[in-house]
Amino acid sequence: MAEQADWTIDDAERVYGVQRWGAGYFEIGANGNLKITPDLSNKNMRIDFQSVIDEIKQEGIQFPVVVRFHDILRSQVAALNKTFINTIEEAQYQGKYMGVYPVKVNQMREVVEEIVDAGAPFNYGLEAGSKAELITVMAYNTNIDSLTILNGYKDAEFMRLALLGRKLGRKMIVVIEKYSELSLLINAAKQLDVMPIIGLRSKMTVKGRGKWESSGGDRAKFGLTTSEMICAARYLESEGMGECLKLLHFHIGSQLTDIRAVKEAISEGGRIYAEMHRMGFKLEYVDVGGGLGIDYDGSKSTNDSSRNYTMEEYVADVVYGMREVCDLENVPHPTLVSESGRAITAHHSCVVAQVVGEIRANSAELPTDKLPTDHILLNNIRELAESVDSQNNLQEIFNDASQWKEQAIGAFKLRVISLEELGKIETLYWQIMVKLQHRLKDAEFVPEELQELDYNLSSQYLCNFSVFQSAADTWAIDQVLPVVPISRMNEKPTVNCSLVDITCDSDGKLDQFVVDHGISDVLPMPPLKKGEDYYLGLFLTGAYQDVMGDMHNLFGRLNEVHIFGDDDDPEDFYIEEVVKGSSVQDVLSIMQYNPDAMAQSMKRMIDQHISSGAMKPREAVKWTDFYEDCLKGYTYLKTS
Ligand SMILES: *Cc1c(COP(=O)(O)O)cnc(C)c1O
View 1 (cartoon, rainbow, N blue to C red):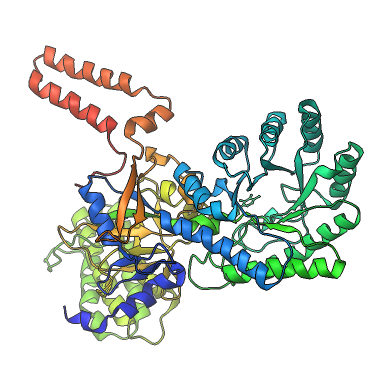
View 2 (cartoon, rainbow, N blue to C red):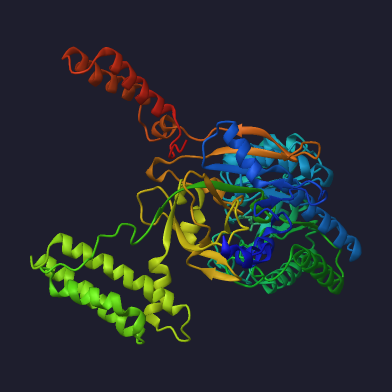
């Protein structure tokens, strides 16, 4: 391995940028494997990802697998709360922080339970945005001192559920998103004779920047305009419920890429709060919504997949910004609420998929030795292939080769050349492209057309997963996610490849990667070795992606393993729980099929072959069992 001498772990770090997006949790170990430090308060606990994979295999769990690190969830909950607590103390801010986790970002029961548990010392609460989520958070937010914030569109039943929470003494805050919800709430409250706690969501004029910027402004889907806010407050007062109005809410978008939007939102929101106060509405809480971004591409920039600030800077802008407005206007500092979801959950889970093959443009070559009967097109392109290294005009070589290949296709259609000759011309064409690519490496100037050569010649690594299930945001909104091999990063990655999934949809691919401080359409990977199981991970998938996957091609949910760090364990971890992914019969049932009836139907067909003597009973039983086993099995490729 002569090439390895000039390759170090630092080089791997430069190419994959693991520490830049890893937020202290991920790094490349000296052995070339990905390492995880899941608990930032205990750096001694370090998990080698390859040993997690080995254990998953030992347990007989099939890939692809979602791997969840519960300690990362806990660390993020603690980090957000402690940052607010420390900043509030440092700023001598008079209010408190009472955060809530918005369950829509990841509603998995285990995730919600872990967050509630880790948040208990901070009275960290939950947020719901739909009736089903409300029903969930009512049962799971068991801490009586924490808040439950209710956003989203609501009906009378929603209001009655929220009021049931009030009857049980819980701090449930109904946030009015739309003016007409107010009378629904007032009527229900009078009927049930309970005092609600009410919040108003402001539409805000400031817009977030980034993919979600339409969450704010005049055309925003949610929230009240200035005049609606004032009318709502007066309406409540006239109904004798002015006291119930306690919270101002705004949310200007998710993944805010530019800290300036946060500053602007705080000063606008602060002004609204202060003015409402002076009008006699003594609000106690200001809820700044979500939006705290994640650095998916590690660039610390205003790219859509990054952000130009840290969690500390975000919190400082919220706390100091609110203090400044309140002090200027001489109103009390409100209790601060935030609804960060992405920042809490993104890091804790990843998808591990096996690379099951390589697709190359020129993987099978025909012998191209000269025959006396060869057509002139074939002779021309062969001569060109032989002379590439002695010619200087690379663009001309490219033009000639491309032109002859095109002419050859025309000639084939006109029955001038045979299929075999066309195949040979194709072989020679790709040989020329490979030679050109080598020569371009040393060239000072690369003509535009030839710049795509690297991509056209790159391999595709076929991975046993579905983009639609496991990287839905990548497919839908071009979300860039870090993709990194789990092992062998101590070897020079000599293959440039894009990744394709196993759905039969040409959109089922990944061709945007965080590489070498930028975004690249190919990912450098080590060459595949015969007989070796090789895995890669899609990271930072814990927010939204995790729960948004769809059933395209009937690939369902993934098997999951839940990892807990454990200092006393030789490998520093144990698998606490395995959650089975969808079986074929699970996904079929969702689509209204009846798997039992299908098995019976197959059995009937097989039985007919026994009756006719075409199949022996012993063989027939085997085939019947096989079909039933496949129904019960995993939807993804079985690779071992
Ligand atoms: C989606 C949403 C959030 C979560 O936003 P993140 O950017 O993921 O933190 C918070 N509040 C509301 C109202 C939302 O709609």
